[in-house]
Length: 166
Image (cartoon, rainbow, N blue to C red; front, side):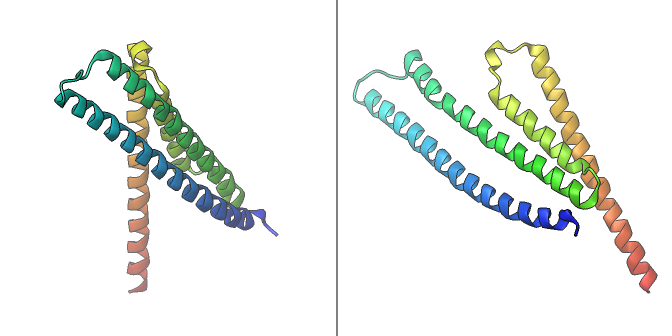
């Protein structure tokens, strides 16, 4: 009995469960961050209106440091998505014995996005930033053309099928 269909079915259940858990956790993180930022801004605005200190560099720095944690959290979410995509690649290979380019491109795009989130822009060499930009552009362009070619191929196949039946 081939292991591909069983692995594909098991992966489908695992992927769905992981994605739902990630969605709930990501929603909670975004709500928490939105609440925290709103609270800080309203508090500072009310202090300023009542004659207190306005926005100063210390407050801005403290706020940014507080939200640097979000970068780590979002990076962790993307790392889990990379793991899911790699699992999908292995399962699809087990099923069809073919490496799917679109999944590899997706993993590369997610990995670059995760790396971009982790970068310390102030201390990164500008050539590195330009290189990452070129890589992201190239992967996005490759993904676009790959999807376009797949759609064109699918449309041509449908046209041949409908034309042969007439």
